[in-house]
Image 1 (cartoon, rainbow, N blue to C red):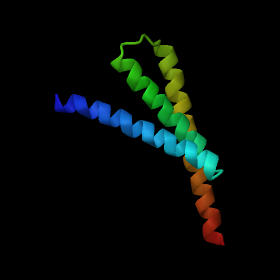
Image 2: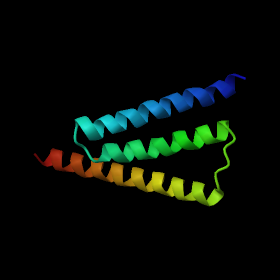
Image 3: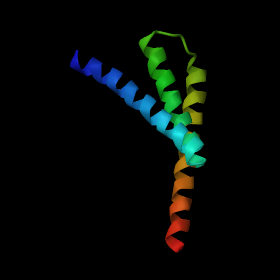
Image 4: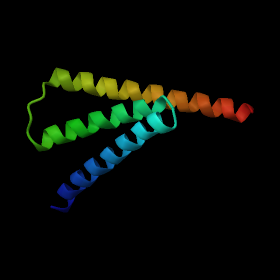
Length: 89
């Protein structure tokens, strides 16, 4: 029962991270914020679909997780490049 509650807490944290990513994109004008949002939006969608027993095709899930992984890869690459440029200044 306690571990089941961890799933709900995890979803709440994923939503918060997605919102922060969106705020980074909108307010800070950083492109990687959109990648963070996309990744965690996919995680929230997946978790909610599992909890509500929505039938999502396995191919659809593969595609969504590929998009999430690619999105995060691009985001961390942008963060890495930004930090590297800032250190040179």
